[in-house]
Amino acid sequence: MRVALAAGGTGGHILPAAAVWEALRTLRPDAEARFFGPDDRGERALAERTGLAFERVPAAPVRGRRPVALARNLLTVAKGTATAAAALWRFDPHVVFSTGGYGSFPTALAARLLRRPLVVYLPDVEPGLAVRVERWLATRIATATEAALRHLPAKKTRVTGYPVRAAFFAFDRASARRALGVAEGERVLLVAGATQGAQAINRAVFDGLETLCRAAFVFHVTGPRDIEAAHAAREALPPALRQRYLPASYREDLPVVMRAADLAVMRAGASVLGELPAAALPAVLVPGTYAGGHQRANARWLAEAGAAVVLEERELGRLVPTVLELLGDEERRRAMASAAARLARPDAAEAIARLVLEVARR
Image 1 (cartoon, rainbow, N blue to C red):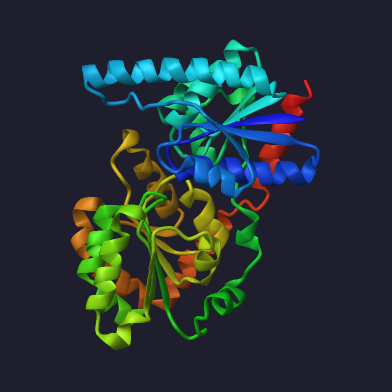
Image 2: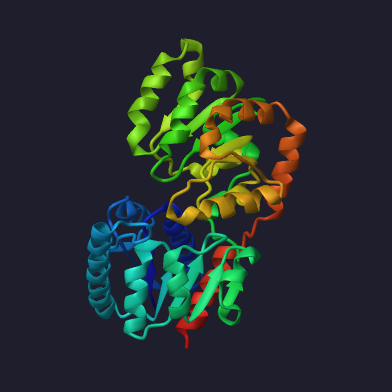
């Protein structure tokens, strides 16, 4: 069986595709998959790390663009659709699986033009522009939360949860800390903006770095743009604190760090809906305001469940005191961790994989 995976743009769309492919390989060891998407935000590297062949499909966002940029990006989408159609014709998949985001749209559209079954996954609480169109092209739809159902056609939608990598369930807190070399009694703070980093969050952390390092070991995933600034900030720390600050542009072992952490500071991209519950990790969420502002809905869903605290970007001056308050309140963190764990759907990847197989057999 051959499966085309359509994704791109952000890790919140790429990582679910990888997790579902992981589950598909378990259910159907004979399955073959290929990743279709753009190659301008690290998609090829992420796909190839999971062992997927990569087909470059040009894509571009169209929301909120000025007329000249809109026209240029629409031409890119048209070119991407033609490229995807030719690549799909050669690969001849039994089913196409799209995880939304602008990077998926040309391949999803090409799939329907070629009359190939299309399964669309909405990883966010609210759909972006791509999924708002793809929901009408889809054979079946899966989604992360019940809250998303009001935006989707009920008859062909199934709530599955957010699929996360199996690595999240391979460690508990104690084994994760042993793997990282962190003593059980130490507090651990994870800061991770997104696969591309979050410069506003990074700056707030740099400004309060010495204070944060006195309170906890700080694992900081900066993204590629700010890693040099992070190394400079580390060198500026008192020598005794430098070992308590561990910056990296990207961490393949992020599930391990999340399982080991006491608290996270993160954007509210789609991945937090699955990864924070899977890790039972309390969080301070700083939603981005781009791509239609869907991160606010994600952050609100976790906060209303009691698993997170939300800070707007304009409130980042309060980040350090907010983090210190939570790190110092073990009872509150324990309650937030329990709330996060109640949202976990460990079987999400398998549930989506079974839906993909169900559609492919038709």
